[in-house]
Length: 366
Image (cartoon, rainbow, N blue to C red; front, side):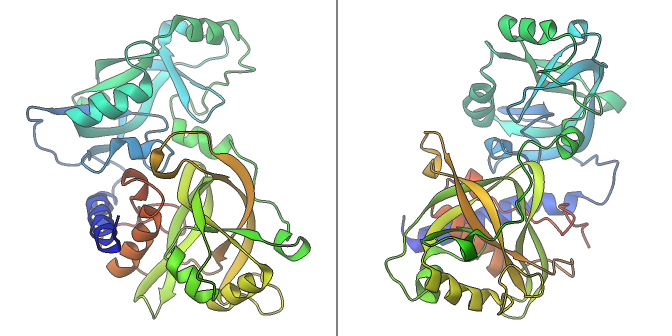
């Protein structure tokens, strides 16, 4: 894909996600929407398809958020699968340890293609999950919902009467709140691998530091990079850059989220050159006294452009901005540069740039 084509895709992706930026500002979260036309469907999502979580990209760039805080009218059982997503079961399947409650989630208007070619395959409808139309609470109408249908999986959950393996979601029915407290990946380590171990060092890029920029800054035109994902983390924006005319990217830990980027392998001298561009503390690049600081993490490498295969864990380092206070949004040029970087390694859906503030939330419009 030529750079100009990637740039057009990047701009399109940022703009398409920008529709959601003005939808916050009210906890009521009911967004005006037109009646569904032929080929359009309302879907209630409550697990890994939620905004900011790792399967949200399966909704693509054509789906429209119509309710940001919806609930089902009927109660269900919601349990942690232990694999980064929940199981929703009928209330009749409740174990003594379970509390049945309405599911908390979001409602999207999706196309035929998203429903039949993305969501149904993800949920293995109709074999593992079964999609059906349900009533939403508060007069919000009806929407399709995926409920666990596989008999063997249901039996395994029901036999775990004490919830030792399939832990009940807490609070009941609310997966987003559950993953914030039930961490699925270890916290970032307080280590200094790039100072204590010989290179080359894996450096994870998630912002505007594309491969060409790395080659120029590190004075090495031969640097290569591979697709990588950082689990349990989200891209945020904060501070102010005179060069870009707005906020710039950093990273925060966010259980349940996945941040897509790439990893390049740099020698010790190349890493020192990059420190200069990132304005780390000259005596200690891990110190919070610089503009950015180094942070050791574990990334999962591989699976470029969604081509299949299982990503493998690898130690890496990334740069975190020390001042991420929200003073205003990033410029469109900066968002385009971030999207262009991701598009070099991932598909369109994973390259959507969501603007989050230093709290990991979508800033209020205006």
